[in-house]
Length: 344
Image (cartoon, rainbow, N blue to C red; front, side, top):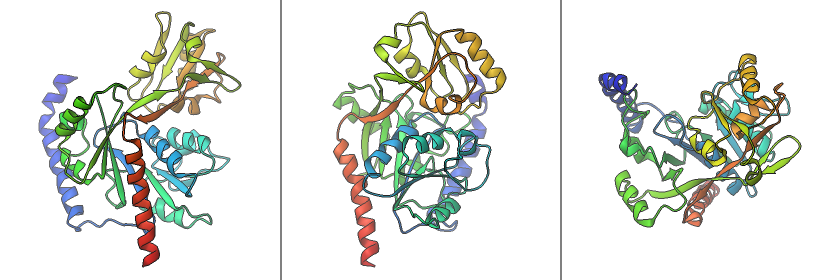
């Protein structure tokens, strides 16, 4: 695979040239972006998958939803519906996609919508009887047809965009220069004890400009796993023989947190839709043991016909330091935009 990526280097150069031209045309206003009067916060990355967008969106929902009417808008990756869909009691993971359905189930006080056309999605949300006051765009960093008011760029500690290269040789969707659009850069999935010195070294490597802020977060795992009718402490479940199941981009930390030498780990592709054959494979591996999966996989599996008891492990994004500075930056942007709108 590594050799193949090296051989595809000329295509990476071509792809980088095409995306750079596209960004240039948007930057110069030749290709048009649509902006909206309400606060629109875009969360995304330069690389392909696995940077922790879902827990970061959930962090923003927790921060904002008690004070404001919040909506999330995603494209609904691998969903079986088309166009604009606003989540309601008839929705499921096949209609919305796994991550939006997870938002809908966890946060009943917000609106959750999907639309590959983000401009249309925002327009449709603003036509609803209950209009959102803030829209969070999930995985929309490259969606230049919408000009968000605030951009949060995520990059993984073990896979910094500064060390990466364009697809297909590397994993970047666009060149590193795309980071210049970000208001905030968050280095995700860090070790909890990442030193100030190492943080500064990473900050210098990312080469952010003076107006950009850099924060560092880690994935904080819950101390319990949850099923339909019960929860079990991780300290208890860790000693049991079980099947660990994941269909996410980078499952190794999930496995490492829960596994012991008696466990079996089973992986599927990210956002995988489990067929009857897949479920039979899972059940054969589990036999009568408990199955522990990720929260994103659980929303697709909880109504399946698995015989073994199924549990999931929640996660959240936690700041190593300066959480209040991050919160203040988000809230100040919202207040500033709302004030300027009222003044106008």
